[in-house]
Image (cartoon, rainbow, N blue to C red; front, side, top):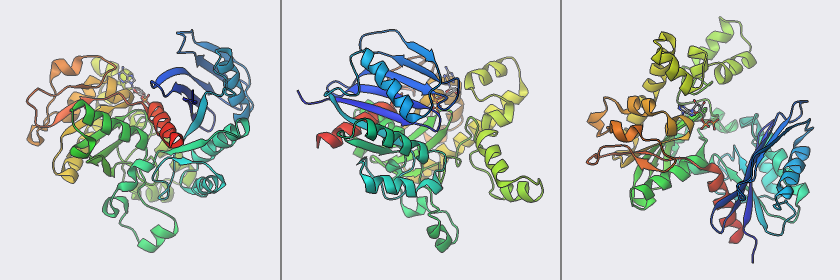
Length: 401
Ligand code: ADP
């Protein structure tokens, strides 16, 4: 039997998340995470899903990504799923920034690694860790295809009118400043799954996808192709997020530097890590914010209102970008779970054909589902995202040829 397993690796600067899937039936064999790599308090959590096994967890120093991947391999081997198995077909890597060049998943070779490295200036936090993950996996299984699946790829179909900032063209081009967008794997998966939920082909439908996790982004998808998205050069632009400000007048930065006396690094940290919901009310977990609102907390209420106001503006904008909209899909931690966010996001937008059915919105389920009234012109959907399955599917399709 030809190899059918794909290991999906999502390598961050101090963590590695992984899933092992069998692509014969897209089933998950194992999933886990190594955290705090390089610290004394590293932690590994591994769940052997195939055998319904119990989650194993241990704390011990894991020096680097190589040690992390070896530890993962050992855990997998305990379940008979080791990385040396001939059943492993490929390793699929999440790579955050693929620039303009990578429009599709790509089998990694030296030239691909060099290009991912060249993009480090536009993704200084992510691409170095993704590279380390690929190199480590290559060293462990040099015979195996390593496939890079880019967060930016789905957005490379954006027209120049959406992708360019209105700043001096020569300066922008010299520094590769343009809107790249992120969460592309999720937007691709969810827009297709939404079309399926409507019983139509992706080419036939226009969908607005709202990926609302800790990071959050919206995209406008026309006939299966992305035509606009809310994140830009970096994941800072767009919606209000857990810790990121999203859209703000760029002059805020000059003001904080000149008048506030802050360094560029301090402003970077402020806007990326100390803003958004956490900056507005001290919490970035929507469950906690809703709990505080129920207790009458005005600060939490204001944070929620600012979050919703921004979301509404993007929904309106993307209705205008698309002209006709068949569906709006909510996904990721907040989008899949927070009924009050979904309700508030479309409240008052009946003029755009948008409405949520209260009873359907209250249903909790892991399945894709509609929450708009039956006769609604624009369907509103909750569609759980599955980035690992999408990376594995794209990886397997590429190596199977
Ligand atoms: P990321 O992948 O960006 O880290 P997720 O998509 O996992 O984020 O989303 C995490 C967020 O989802 C949490 O910070 C929390 O705000 C929200 N969330 C998760 N579960 C719920 C829930 N039951 N109700 C409301 N919000 C939730």
